[in-house]
Figure 1: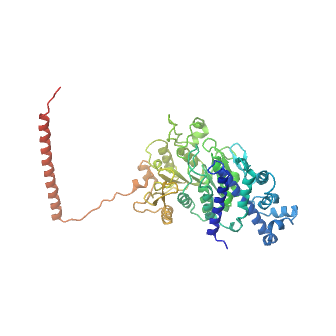
Figure 2: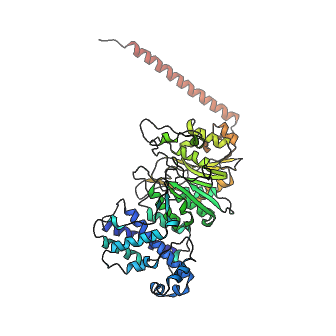
Figure 3: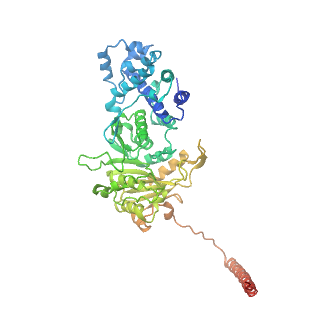
Length: 543
């Protein structure tokens, strides 16, 4: 029997093989490669999931040596009745669009057209459940015409793709859970979700950060039927960890992200992690300018849990003037950051996301937000106004200051800001900046890795509201106000003064030594003073 570890290796090999095919046809490192790789991978996954579900329902199909041959014996009506019993998380795939039917047609003329049409048919048949919405209401379907990205030999390219897919099967791992698919997903998109240029740079949130955020937010095993939201979702790392901590069947995901690529990757992540029921809530659009999720009265929708790793420096100068409206004055209560005269890296858009999140929490809502560590101590401006509001409204749970380089792709030190609208008492501040080990990633960037024990230490101390010397401190809202609303743990640590008991004789000896040293220093000072005066007398002016 294939173990999970073996299958993970086989899956990664499939991904590598697909990338090799793309490279052989001139698409290596091409901007469209990720579309081909992720879409054919997803087609194969959905194909196998549909076949797996049919076999679970029908023993005859499960025992058949030739599944396709056995399937052909079923009438259209019988197959439709069988398909109606399949979970709604499973895509409906007509027999003509199965991979096995595609494989036997590979030697036909214009096979690329057959290949493309097969994927388009699957997308059309599943448009209602599997489509991502744009802000304007357009549906982004599962698949597109993929052969268009190949200049020559389209038929050969599509044939090569099919041959890589047909000898692989997902069927025996559909019972696996989050950890397995999280690893596979990260490997699948590792070359396509980076901050390498581009206006909408995307950062892959480290697992340590995502795990800590989820574990400190979800502390009740009885959480059920809740809503989870990320206004800058990216490919969904934070949402997946949150959903896994709650239970995929106990929550509904909502998101918005300005990036087309991120929205497509998030959809893939939801499918892999049995969260298909939330795909309809993925919105591609600008959260700050035009938040999509709203209540019937036009007010912003509010959520039980919110997670976010917002962009720190994204240029919003193109629409900053449009944010000055009556509705936004309430949402952005602390103000809108000014656009600098010269557009540099000082675009503090994360301040808009923090305010948006505060405005989007239910009465008992909780949130975790990645922020620049400078935010927690800034002594003026919007930063301080936000912190003051958090204290006055008693909606602060705590802060965890992370080690430097926890994100390998940015030198910005980060902290995790935790909100809890039910926390009327103490706040816990954790300084984890000295934890972790320094390593270099495959690109040569230095990053800090936390061990499992260190991650758990942070989680346990935060959830228990425990004080540990030089690591964590528990403070009141009044304490924070007295410290000018600083949320840095270090500013609350006790200053330790060490006392050493000595005898009267030892004290007098030390005092005598200090006196002797002072006499020597005063004597040397007098000598230097006389020498300087003598030198000044010898100076002459010569024209």
